[in-house]
Each structure stands twice: as C-alpha cells, then as structure tokens.
Length: 474
Ligand code: NAD
Image (cartoon, rainbow, N blue to C red; front, side, top):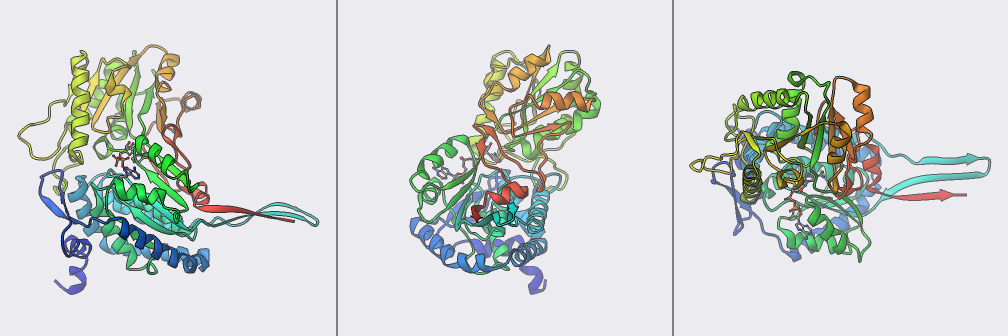
C-alpha cells in the first residue's frame, strides 16, 4: 500500500486522534470490541482551545464570504478523500451499518451540507432606501461558538453546527458526545487538514467540560443538539453570560394516517421514517395514529417490511439496521416495551432481544392495540419501537398528536395532498412532512416547537442565527 492510501484508512485516522498515553476505551456497540481510545480533555484543555479559537477568529472573520466558502468546499473535498475510512470508524463506534441511510450516507451528508452551506450567503439587507434615509441590516460574526452534540448522528450533527458557524466568520469549539468522540475527532482531523490553524477545535469529554463550555464567558453562542433535560441545564448555565442559543432538543414525533391513505403505498416510507438509524433519530416517527378503517392493513404492511430488513453488525454490507448505541438506550427501550406488553398491548414484531447475542441489538418492535397514555407512547424511547394507536376521528388524532409538550417533527399520510396540508397546519411541530418523515435538506430550515427547542438550523435562516445582526441607519 502506498503512503497516500495508508493515510486514508480508518486505522490511520485512529492513530492520529488517539492520545499518546492514557485515554478512555470506546467500545463497538455491536460486538463490545474496543474501537479505540478517546482523549479525556479537562478544563485546562478547554480553556486553551477557547483561547486559541479566540486568537484565530479575527483573521478568519477578515476573509470574504467567498474565501470562507472556498475553505468549506475544500473541507468537503477532504472528506471525500477520507469518506470510506470515516464511514468505517463511524460504523464501528456508533454501530450504524455502512449501507443504507447509515454510515456512508452520514459521511456523504457531511459533504453535501458543507457544499450547500458554502453556496449560501447572508448579504446585507437594505431595509429602507428613500432619498437621504437608509437602513441596512448586516450580520457580523459572533466570535467563538461552542457546539455540543449527541451520539446518534455524531458527524452529521457536528457539521450542521460547524459549517454555518465557520461560514459566518466565527471560530468553533466542538464538544462531541462522550459515546462517540472518535467519529467527531476524526472528522475534525480531516477538516483541519485544510482549514486555517485554530479556527476549529474539538474537546473530548463529558458533561463536565460541556457545562464549562456553556458557562464560559469567552463563548458567544452555543449550538446544542441533545436531550431536553440537558438543554434546560444549558439555558441556566449560559444565562450569566447572556449567550445566544440554538437548542435542538428531544422529540416524540406523531404521524397521522388518514383513512384515504394506501397502506401498501406508504409502508416503506412509514417504516424508514420510524426506524431510520434504528429509531435513534430525534425527528423519527415515534407514535403512529392510524384510522380504524385501515388500521389492520397498515399494521400488516409495516410488519411485512419489518421482517425483510436485516439487522446486524454494521460492517456487514447486507445489514440495514444496527444495534442501539449504548446500554442506557437499550435499557430504556427494553423497559418501555415491557411496560407496553404488561399493559396488554399486542407485540406484533420484535420485543424479545436475543440474550445470547453480543451487542445492544434490539429487534424492530411494532406494538398494536396500545393506549395513548402508555409510557411507550408518551416518553421519548429513541429506539426501534413503534406504538400504533387506533383512532376514530381526525379531531381525536390531532388532540393526541398535540398532547405532549414536545414538537419537533410530525407527519400526515394521505392520498389527498390538500386534505393532508390542512391537517398538517393544525399540528404543533417545527416540521410537518406529508407522506414521508425525518427527511432533512440544507435548503429547508429545521427547528423544534414547544420543549423541542428554539432557534433554527439550515438554510439562510440558520446561517443568520450564527451572526450578530447590526443595523446601520441614517
Ligand atoms: P444528552 O443531552 O445526554 O447529551 C448531549 C450532549 O450534551 C453530549 O455531548 C453531552 O456530553 C452533553 N452534556 C451533557 N450534560 C451537559 C451539561 N450539563 N452541559 C453541557 N453539555 C452537556 O443527549 P444524548 O443522549 O447524547 O442524545 C439524545 C437526545 O438528543 C435525544 O433526546 C434526542 O431527541 C436529542 N436529539 C435532538 C436532535 C434535534 O435536532 N432536535 C437531534 C439529535 C438528537
């Protein structure tokens, strides 16, 4: 193997990012094998990273939008070169398969998002231009942005935070989840092969360094994606320094299947809307409300898809679903499915993880004849279980869909788009999809309603939230 090819392997990436001494073992959730060692950064390391990011930020901000876009495109080129190595590392650490809407898809998503962000520009807006009277709205860099992410889509979510922050002239300190630090450290290493020194740093650690980042007076804004509980802690700890916040928090997305939907036609999109990334997706379909006229057909159509989707070790190219990422998540799903079973609900598929199988594999679990008050419906289970609730009138379905204090995504399923649009407008959620679910696009803003957070990501709306608005008026 020549040297150039060697540097593009997952072993090489691990070699570069692992600490020379010490470090915390990261285990493959599919096998329990050690993937690598993650550095354990402390508060001094965090201080040093913030100081370096501060020193680099003014020079970065002086570049034109075009020049920064060139860097983002070069970063995308760099990821392309390392794409397979990054996907392999992600698959080993997070558990998601290489194939399907999984590890390779996530790496390609990083490339696409960088390019899409590079192509956008927030220019000054002329608000008034009347004779001698003029008002202009400019967006200036905020300074150093802190980016904190979860373990479900670690690379993708890091890029969702890093790309717009850099594009708007900020430098960034990233704090990945302690469950999946290697993926983000490797991604950052690749980005840093082309970015100017110190505009992006990664701090590897848990809630302690996370909290220190959110309380640090040198950080102007926190981009946070994670649970609602942590989001509330961040609101409190960032209050003293009046930080800007974008909070992408927990969800429990409802889907309403109207009586005119065709069960066979929607089954694939319904299934992947719920089980993408083995259900570990904030805006996956988590509660399905199906009209009584087509309830049995929808349950059967979903069960039919479920039996044909292979789950297993991510590096096996045949698998489309992987394990849960960690034991905490495995235990949450197990507890909630058992509570549903005990309540008399019908487990249509799954529900019985194999105790002899290594790893945190939990089978695709469809639960029918379940009450809307069941904890499997009302709590965020964040795994491969889908409660399917029968309804008799659309008003009742809407009431149940809107009955929780979260509102990230939702969907309506129908063969009539205008009826679906009308129902969609009555759902309390940041995004309502029609005949699909959990589909993101860099041109379309994304954010939560209610306790699912505030602020927007993606598109020009997302970019603007990484800038400090300034009006110049005369
Ligand atoms: P989490 O809140 O436990 O952790 C997220 C990150 O916050 C981690 O990096 C963690 O180390 C850090 N953290 C923990 N305590 C902190 C503190 N006090 N101060 C600062 N940082 C702290 O979430 P998770 O379990 O990693 O992820 C799953 C959750 O994320 C689910 O609720 C899911 O819905 C949500 N999520 C939301 C979105 C969205 O776009 N809305 C996307 C993905 C995941």
